[in-house]
Amino acid sequence: MRSLSIIVSILLIIVNVLVGLIVTAYLLENVVMSSFVLVANALLLWVVGNSNMKDAFKVSFYIIFPFLCLLEFILAVLAPAKLENNLHLVGIIACVALQAILIFAAIKTTQHNQELK
Image 1 (cartoon, rainbow, N blue to C red):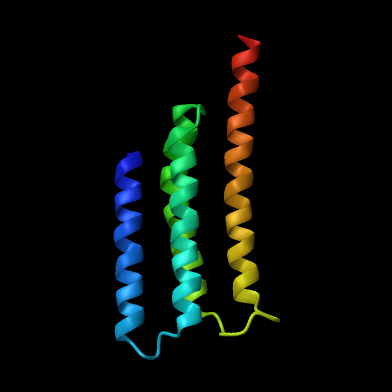
Image 2: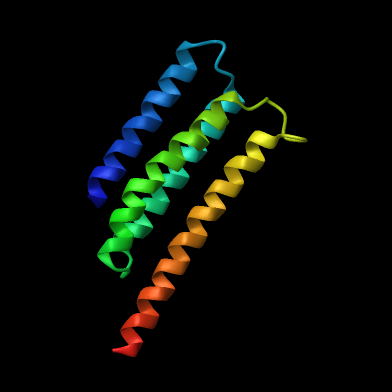
């Protein structure tokens, strides 16, 4: 599952960049932002796959994170080209932070449960 998510992420990044080169209405800022979203989610899924958290957490994250990635990607594509007062960017940052917090909590919970045994 780990290698599949990395391969799919790489293919999505390539397609995203190619679409950005072909479609003139797809601004460079949006291509960069959406590519960042794809890279960030690929890294988060890689962390999930290589962590020592329980399998139930991993399965849940492999189901939830693609939906959050889709939401982040839509926000990145629709975001204005400016950085200041960009609520789309705030939403993307909040989603990535939520994912990182969930991963941290799952790893700490697994560690705590292993210490109790």
